[in-house]
Length: 106
Figure 1: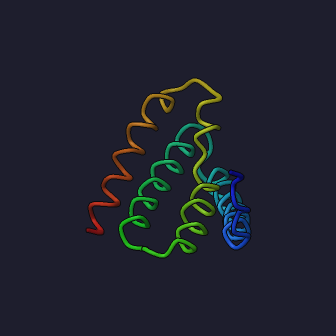
Figure 2: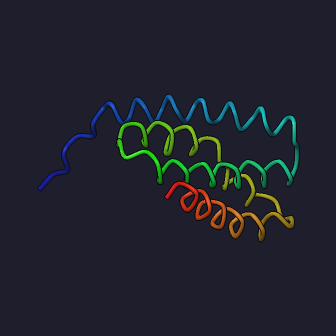
Protein backbone atom coordinates (compact mmCIF):
# COMPACT_ATOMS: atom_id res chain seq x y z
CA UNK A 1 0.00 0.00 0.00
CA UNK A 2 1.63 3.32 -1.05
CA UNK A 3 2.16 6.15 1.41
CA UNK A 4 -0.25 9.09 1.14
CA UNK A 5 1.27 12.30 -0.24
CA UNK A 6 2.61 14.70 2.39
CA UNK A 7 0.41 17.51 3.59
CA UNK A 8 1.87 20.49 1.76
CA UNK A 9 0.97 22.83 4.63
CA UNK A 10 3.43 20.96 6.85
CA UNK A 11 6.11 20.98 4.16
CA UNK A 12 5.71 24.71 3.60
CA UNK A 13 5.71 25.56 7.32
CA UNK A 14 8.76 23.42 8.08
CA UNK A 15 10.63 24.91 5.11
CA UNK A 16 9.83 28.50 6.09
CA UNK A 17 10.60 27.86 9.76
CA UNK A 18 13.87 26.10 8.94
CA UNK A 19 15.05 29.09 6.96
CA UNK A 20 14.22 31.48 9.79
CA UNK A 21 15.88 29.21 12.36
CA UNK A 22 19.01 28.93 10.24
CA UNK A 23 19.30 32.71 9.98
CA UNK A 24 18.84 33.03 13.75
CA UNK A 25 21.53 30.39 14.34
CA UNK A 26 23.95 32.23 12.06
CA UNK A 27 23.28 35.53 13.83
CA UNK A 28 23.91 34.05 17.26
CA UNK A 29 27.04 32.24 16.06
CA UNK A 30 28.46 35.59 14.92
CA UNK A 31 27.81 37.10 18.35
CA UNK A 32 29.07 34.01 20.26
CA UNK A 33 31.53 32.18 17.98
CA UNK A 34 33.13 28.76 18.43
CA UNK A 35 32.23 25.93 20.77
CA UNK A 36 30.47 28.22 23.27
CA UNK A 37 28.16 29.51 20.55
CA UNK A 38 27.27 26.01 19.38
CA UNK A 39 26.70 24.92 22.96
CA UNK A 40 24.45 27.91 23.67
CA UNK A 41 22.46 27.44 20.46
CA UNK A 42 21.81 23.75 21.10
CA UNK A 43 20.96 24.06 24.79
CA UNK A 44 18.66 27.08 24.33
CA UNK A 45 17.02 25.48 21.29
CA UNK A 46 16.46 22.21 23.15
CA UNK A 47 14.95 24.04 26.12
CA UNK A 48 12.57 25.89 23.78
CA UNK A 49 11.60 22.61 22.09
CA UNK A 50 10.66 21.25 25.53
CA UNK A 51 8.60 24.37 26.26
CA UNK A 52 6.89 24.12 22.88
CA UNK A 53 6.00 20.45 23.34
CA UNK A 54 4.57 21.20 26.78
CA UNK A 55 2.42 24.14 25.73
CA UNK A 56 1.35 23.82 22.09
CA UNK A 57 -1.05 21.05 21.10
CA UNK A 58 -1.58 22.18 17.47
CA UNK A 59 0.33 20.10 14.90
CA UNK A 60 0.85 22.91 12.37
CA UNK A 61 2.26 25.25 15.03
CA UNK A 62 4.56 22.48 16.28
CA UNK A 63 5.68 21.81 12.71
CA UNK A 64 6.56 25.45 12.10
CA UNK A 65 8.25 26.23 15.41
CA UNK A 66 9.50 22.81 16.54
CA UNK A 67 10.68 21.09 13.38
CA UNK A 68 11.17 24.25 11.34
CA UNK A 69 12.42 27.18 13.42
CA UNK A 70 14.00 25.27 16.30
CA UNK A 71 15.17 22.43 14.07
CA UNK A 72 16.90 24.99 11.85
CA UNK A 73 18.21 26.88 14.88
CA UNK A 74 19.80 23.93 16.65
CA UNK A 75 22.90 22.63 14.98
CA UNK A 76 23.90 19.24 16.25
CA UNK A 77 25.64 18.39 12.97
CA UNK A 78 27.96 21.40 13.33
CA UNK A 79 29.05 20.66 16.88
CA UNK A 80 29.93 17.07 15.92
CA UNK A 81 32.15 18.21 13.05
CA UNK A 82 34.90 19.50 15.33
CA UNK A 83 36.31 17.96 18.48
CA UNK A 84 36.01 20.00 21.66
CA UNK A 85 34.52 19.83 25.12
CA UNK A 86 31.19 20.66 23.49
CA UNK A 87 31.13 17.27 21.76
CA UNK A 88 30.49 15.61 25.13
CA UNK A 89 28.68 18.37 27.00
CA UNK A 90 26.18 19.45 24.35
CA UNK A 91 24.06 16.29 24.03
CA UNK A 92 23.84 15.83 27.79
CA UNK A 93 22.96 19.45 28.49
CA UNK A 94 20.54 19.61 25.55
CA UNK A 95 18.56 16.61 26.82
CA UNK A 96 18.46 18.10 30.32
CA UNK A 97 17.36 21.46 28.88
CA UNK A 98 14.55 19.86 26.83
CA UNK A 99 13.37 17.98 29.93
CA UNK A 100 13.44 21.18 32.01
CA UNK A 101 11.58 23.09 29.29
CA UNK A 102 8.87 20.45 29.31
CA UNK A 103 8.72 20.36 33.11
CA UNK A 104 8.32 24.12 33.54
CA UNK A 105 5.29 24.05 31.29
CA UNK A 106 3.46 21.19 33.00
